[in-house]
Length: 403
Image (cartoon, rainbow, N blue to C red; front, side, top):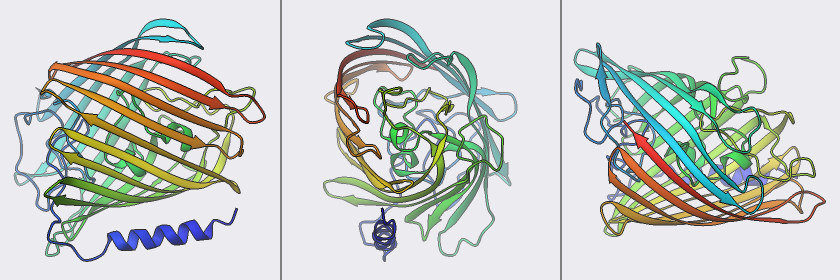
């Protein structure tokens, strides 16, 4: 496969994102996410008590849409430490694999320590520890470190309303939808497991905002996933530009991403007929080795009143064999406590006859910010290389307790 044309098209799209600001351009939505609140062009005042809705008071340099469910406020500990956590319990029925099973998927503890100077927030130290027990992943019952990094705001000139943050440690790759929300405790997952083979990686990143409206993320990571501290195994380079528009009919966030490096092999074959899965921590067990990957992706998020839509589409190559895929999801909240969700995804592996597709519908009920019930029905269809297709009907119920 000739890789130059898609890369040339991708750079053209990124240049369009970097065009002059329109009148409708504003900062990203101000809702918090499990990671943190969205960035501002000036550092916010020090927050001693936890912010309403949860999350760290320290800004991060990527677009962050409001969370699906409001998050509880973290618990203050000691001198400026903020503590939070989650317990994820699930029950599943399926036509293949483990047909009936109840399990504790994850028990998570998060510790954040905002860094301040002269009464202004300049960074954050974050540590996430997860005891996980995911189904259908052999020998995955372990305690792992998820995100673990230091975030520091670089002292650059602010006349242009530009910011820059340096992040060192283990963090979620800023590629496509992974740059704008954290799905690790959700039932629905975008394409990162099948496309990249990892979610969290070890390395460094520089992120921020140009001229107050154009977000950027650039990272160099090892490509081996979290808890692997070999600094020279594969090297993965990721770059994304994102921009948010506000119109009379809702808020739209769009982004374009480029990625290149050695990543885990995720193909389907007779020995591995089911899609590649990752535990909540993102720990990678790449027993099949690594391969050179190139990815070009576009992502978008739309928020209008009680409706949220998000999606991503990507194309690229494993070695010289083409891959492509897309993911689309829609959420509608018909009351402050309840909503419905529907999603569809498709990913074509390097072998032309191999693919994974998914259709899903679900229900979410959150009586308060500490407790969330989710139910999801999935129709899965997977075709390994030189094999026959396999259909799996799966129903999962989740009880998620946050504190």
